[in-house]
Image (tube, rainbow, N blue to C red; front, side, top):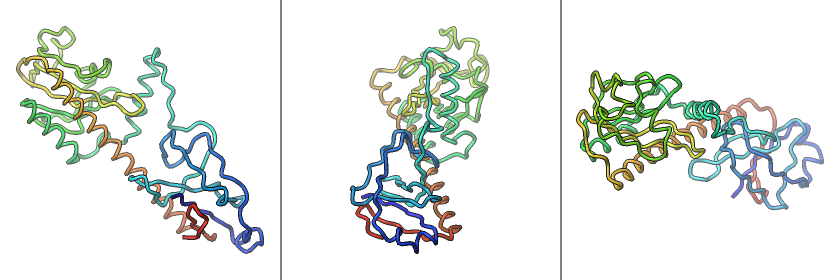
Length: 284
């Protein structure tokens, strides 16, 4: 079902033209922007008998969806041109790729937020299943790694130069380091030579739908361990994918809340007549 919101000025609401059936089509935009609608979202035009003619000073159309795919009260202006949140990533240009990755990370608005039970559960599950003393949800920022969830470690962040997880983002799949003393990349790391004296690391990347690595769900130990089996790597990656799904859900909820707030502000401030119709043209 499609719901449309039409805003008519007072003069339009009383004019003969406003009482006639609309005749123009809603054309497919190049993208839908404003208020954070996902890039690539496709608007399905209503039946030809239910087309809209906005007022000359009003928005072209207003459409929204809630978390479950149903329609939500939100005002979304249809724009043409490039979406402000779209990224063009050149895989051959590491600077461009890193800038796009950092922009994607900022878009989740997760850095420096308070602890949340959902993420704490994931690190507890990882710690219990793999029987390790430390498990983290680590997000790799420009010059630091910040821990959204941390079980078994008192730190909340470290410099990026000390980050194991930053290395995990440069490869594909789960990064496993059975013994840090045997790996020249980490033998001089301050987290290895000093407290907590890490000896084992395994991290599964948190990858966005656009392919940007934000960080990892990782497990650590203070003694060397055998490399993870293929099944164990798969399980760790499944947990990381679940963390990523939680991040997507969190961002969607925030967007919907913002959309509803804007919609409410429009209703509160508008002096115009506002008519809500369903996909069949019936006033709801």
